[in-house]
Length: 225
Image (spheres, rainbow, N blue to C red):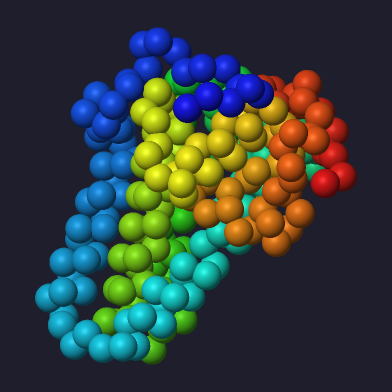
């Protein structure tokens, strides 16, 4: 694929799924998420008792996922250092994300930070069990949410390789995320789903968007979409 606003992937980047998947599999976040999906999925199958009610948490998570991606990307990953009580704070997650924008081909800083699972996984488990009426539905919700997170990691990783997407859907994701990195970081926050960008005003006609001088650094004032 080609796009006039973004550079080509480096020549040493994996160019096929066969080359890319071993690199993906050696990183901690994909391994952790894969293990979590298998564990929760196995537990759900072991409990049995599947019914149409299992589709409810799946549908809810599927509907909320693009908004979740957008909110985390905007308000967590792109958050700025701040001062409070006379002290400066720059949390690890947005700091790592700024490093990812500066060096988008570096796979070592591309994935979800492992330390974030220390608090995000307990919160996810608590929400699934508090918001569903049974253990079975909680495990359905948990398995599907973790599967969406693993899909996020796969898509995000492949966008930063030479592996060319083959379907219209993944071509749109590829273009959106590449332009977010190299054209203007204030738009295109969706990674695996693009609906929230359309709903929340960050899905412009990229041909009419000015190239941002801070797309690689994330240092600068916030725009008005």
